[in-house]
Length: 511
Image 1 (tube, rainbow, N blue to C red):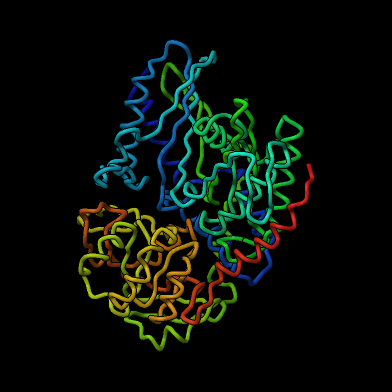
Image 2: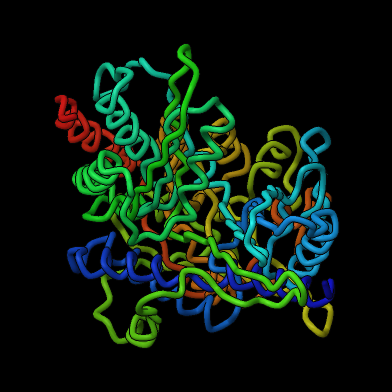
């Protein structure tokens, strides 16, 4: 096999997966967009998502800045050298990272050091099988941390909040799957997709669940009981009112795929792999002799391009928005309320896990009094003049900063933090005491927000790696929604409470 040709084929697969949503996913998003009530926060979010899909495709840049941990599943004919394929995949990953098609996401678990090239122990994930076809099949999924963190595994029997006892039967499985959607709320960038694995052990169950995410959104499960359950879950999950980004609304789940395998008598696991709306998975068939791509998967049916969403974005009636420019006063912050739409112009600073941990025991490298901190790990690249440019810059799931956020805001005088999925009671209390707000940006909309960033004015703490450094960003008309205010109100807490009440309505046995 020509290994140079194979590397180019894998590089093309990585690029396509990162930048261009498959046709079946686009159709599911359009269906949700068409069904949403006009003028709502959910409708605004879906408009932004559609615009972002178009921009990523047009710019050939990452749909979401969190390009996850690349996971390959490879099937090869007998006699093909799998060791050579492993090395070629690594070379393609390094090249794609250098070209800003992937964010450098490989971190040493003991030292916290970022490798910078997406390589490291066990990374990327590669799982090989042999088969009797004469070509190579390579599947790739890029599953970001926000949705990966909402994966969940149940050991039956168990007690579930809102649903009661889940037993070792099809009805117990039903309850687990419904609960998995409820517990994700908006933190996994809903509306999302779930893959479910029934049976196996703890590791094989999760692997089966993730394998379901490679199925076509439009397929029908050959097992009639599971086909019925998939349809049921999709229908009932969309009655919970969690909605896009957890803002409330009609679309909470866009797809449910369930697989089953045998288990040992003592163990009964239901494993759920949650995936965000930015459902980045692709597959190709490769000629085992030449290394060339013979066929792309997921290409059946209509491709929704979403050009109209992008072209009409500036023509639509705009809701009243509130302009924010740092430094922001406490008086300005206390005038904001949950539901307000804000547009930020001026300076803001990125800060994720490493920055928040660092600031607990160190001084800030800049004056943060009155400033905005953005939970974001951008994809960055150097231009021809060796200046940093932003290639993708959507929000990170904020709940990870819950142990630090309130203390950090008080210590440095920060007035607004922005991310996705909301934060918890400790932060809410601090917002009320200190005079701060939480702003929810649209998860996954990395191209939309990158377009709002007009300059990179500096960077601190680069020793933490590109995603975790503190970037100084000059922005214009950067839109977000106030979802936690300084008056003790939290949209996220309200949606979680109401969705739990609706979840309880499905406790009655139906299978």
